Length: 255
Image 1 (tube, rainbow, N blue to C red):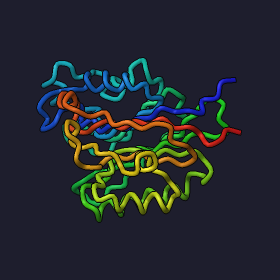
Image 2: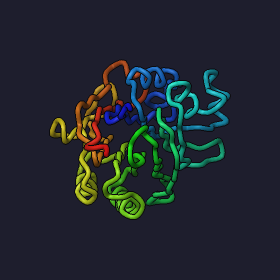
Image 3: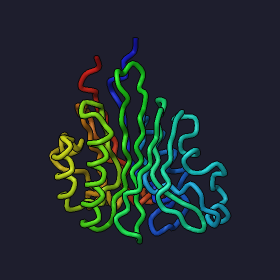
C-alpha cells in the first residue's frame, strides 16, 4: 500500500493568461512553468476561462478554455469557480489535482459590487487517506476592510463545513501586504502559513521579476512543512506579474 503522505502544492495568480499590463498572451509559458514544478495540487487565481474578444485577438487561445488547457494530461482532475462575469466572458479561481476531486463548492465572498471575488472549495480523495483533503483557493480584495469581511466569511464557512481534524490547505492571492488580516485569520482557525513557519516571513511575490510585496499565501492545517520555494526573477516578465509559490508538506498522521 502506497501512502501519499507528502504533497507538492503551488499557488499562482496567472493574470488571466497575460503578462504585466496585458502586454502579451502567456498561457503556454504558464503551463510550462507549472509542469516543471511537479505539483500534485495547484491553486490558480484570475483564470479567464472564456473571453470572446481575446479568443479572437490571440491565435494561441485554447478552444477548451484556460483551465482545461493548463490541466492537460498532467492533472487528471480540475475545478473552476466563476467569480467575475462580463459581456465578453468570465474569470475566477481554479484547482488542478492529480487526485480525484469528489466535491466542489464555489462561494461568492464579494465585499463590494465593484470587485467580484470568490472562494473555491474542493474535497479531494487522496489515495489511502482516511478522510478527504479540503483545498480552498482564494483571491481577496484590494482594500483591507473588504479583506477582513471576506476572511470572516471564509472562517465562518470553514468552521461550519470542514471538520477541525480534517487536512486543510488554503492558498491564493490574499492581497495582504500589511499581513494583519492573514495573521488574525490564521490564529482563529489554527493555521500555519508555510513560508512564515519555515522562514519566519511571508514570501515576497509581487511583482514577479523583482518581488517586493507579500501578497500570496499558503496556509495549512494538519501538515508539517518540508520545503518552500518562490519562483521569481526576470524570466517571469514573459509569464505573469505574480511569482509562483510552492511547498512540500507532509501529513501529520494517516490512520
